[in-house]
Image (cartoon, rainbow, N blue to C red; front, side, top):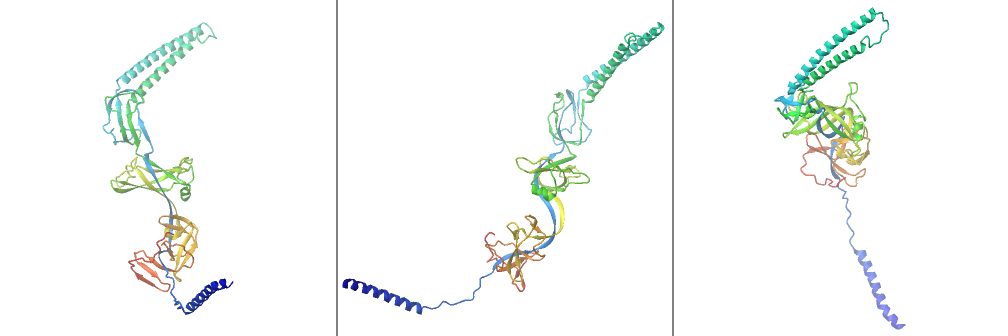
Length: 417
């Protein structure tokens, strides 16, 4: 027992001495200095909320196609004896002008034979008419009141009349075939492709080339259901004088220069595309090579264009920069009086890359915060810098505004919203 006590006493003494030393050191340590340093406000950029008119628009892309395009084919066979010098790729032929003529010799001979057949049929009919009249008189002189049609030669007379009608039909057919040896432009046409030339023998239905009408072109534009709603366009819409379609502005780069053409929505598809789940609307540009051209540059088939469809205009709507909208409907407002962040829910009417449009939730002239802010909350302290239309910056301190052209933007939040 004594051995255990002698062993433990030094240990207990050391522990007691350590505790006493710690208490002495803790009592004599210097106290930390208290400071009144405040959290530095976050510096953000802002833009003023405005009242604007909202032009409902939709952007789509599509390829220009002729509204009417056909393969030019002869209705009769023959050798091409004449071909218009305008009938070349890219050429223009007005409506009714002769494009090609086929050799007419055989068809003229057929007309002559048909006219000869008519003369023979007319002579036969006259002879049969005389014989029928004679037969009727003979029957009357013999006192035969009731006689058969054959005795009166009525079937023979009907056959002669039928032969004359057939001969006239053959003449009409021959003259029609002769007229078809002349091929005219069915509309004001541009030549897309030429596949035949003078001296070539062509058969009925063989293509001479492809032509398209210059009266109008159309562009198929795929739109989403939301875009149709913005434009107030139903499925299976058909433009009319009482219900005209929206105007469309087409843009494309030609020769390194951006060109513009104007058209109109004429109809929408009657069904939804199974693959894309979009609805095609069809815009038309009239006289694309004439009055519809942009300073002489036509809206040519094959061009890939960007279309801006212009819907109705809604007047007096609040507008804020698109970057000020967070999530679906939260708008970040910089409170100028208190230099604090105010997060407000709004009813978004429409938004695009240029901004967000809404009816209520803010006032004209309030500052919408466009800088990204991490972990934002109502009442967050801010240093608000407003960017004006002239490019200058105005800093809001909560009491006064000082104009300056800030060269750096330190302390601006760099994290994504």
